[in-house]
Amino acid sequence: MSTSSKGRDLRLVLFVEGTTGSALQALWGEEIPKQLGLLPFDRVVGFTKGHLVAMSNENMKLKHRTSTILVGFDQLLARELDKKTFDCAVVAWDLVPAWDSGSDASACRWKETLLLYEGLARSKVVPEVWSDRARDRLEELRSRAEPSHRSRLPQPAPQTVLGVCMDPEFEGWLLSEAGVKSALGLNPLKK
Image 1 (cartoon, rainbow, N blue to C red):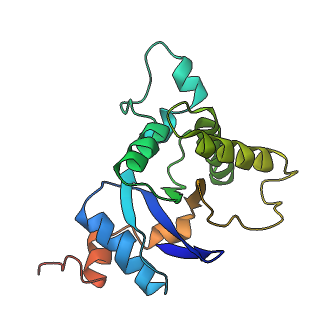
Image 2: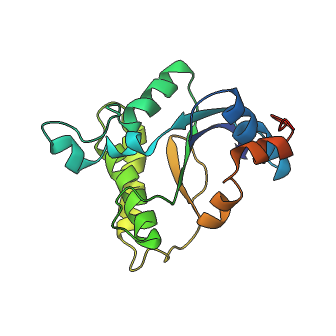
């Protein structure tokens, strides 16, 4: 998805919870943007919450990491930047299940968003400007009296990450992946 910013096109890459492949690219990179009247993302990269957990400070302190995914999200982001540079990363993950099974949905959304930016702000593998912008976003988030208190919605900008924790209402229509693919003409159901 490209968007104009001060006369310049931004190259946007979507990191979405799922397995990277042609179906993910077609669904998230082409069909959903088309249905919403948006330009397609430049590319779509799948990831798991394990990539995010692997980047958490508590997990990094452990002698043996608890996640089976040993690559942190910051490393995945750095790899994708090395493959083909882009301006902004949109990172979308499901609200349910929470990273922490003891969390309620609203706490999970806030906690997971903070963990994403904390990990990127601490990262030594992403370019420094990306870490600096993540640190700025983290400070803005932490300065709020309540999670919902914000002066404006964040906008795509160069060397930024936009975190999107998807609501259950959105996830609900994706419960049947085969049905969604069929509805979009990506993989018709066999009768």
